[in-house]
Image (cartoon, rainbow over all chains, first blue to last red; front, side):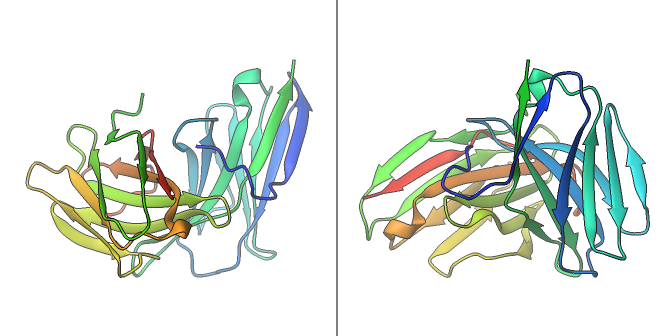
Amino acid sequence: GESVGLHLPTLSVQEGDNSIINCAYSNSASDYFIWYKQESGKGPQFIIDIRSNMDKRQGQRVTVLLNKTVKHLSLQIAATQPGDSAVYFCAENKTPGNQFYFGTGTSLTVIP
Amino acid sequence: DSGVTQTPKHLITATGQRVTLRCSPRSGDLSVYWYQQSLDQGLQFLIQYYNGEERAKGNILERFSAQQFPDLHSELNLSSLELGDSALYFCASSGTSGRATEQFFGPGTRLTVL
């Protein structure tokens, strides 16, 4: 499941620190925005989603913020752990058509 | 383990050939999605089936086709293969709604076209 070959933005954080991963989207018509995590050699794993009429949603150790004014989405991970090391993708879900569009991903490395 | 299975895990074939990738969704899931993850284009949505019927179509080439069978497993058929079709192909499934953002991905099939 690696995305090697793409020029991925990278982020390195110290274990225990908070991480912020950013994503810019292009289409204001998207209904949902979604974050997925992909560990090396595995398929993507759903983390959290947010409906387009919301600004913030919290999950377990994660928070997603949506700024529709500047078309910006962010994922905040609290108290980052080594197991959080992965590539993180933002995705848009649009109707009609139920289309899914994924960003190129950000590679997060957690330093023990 | 997501509960989604894909076979085969690896596939090596030649240009011009045809292959079939298979996916079994999580027990009870009615929707199956297919994605292609390549080195130059990232993760691309190909097609979705819901309870046997095509529900959504993404960037799927005409050389590619898919179907979902009555037992809900799905197959992705790739024909007239080109070098550029080399990629990871993921299947994902989701629950009883025809539209879901929480999808469960399988481990993928790595296709290499020589």
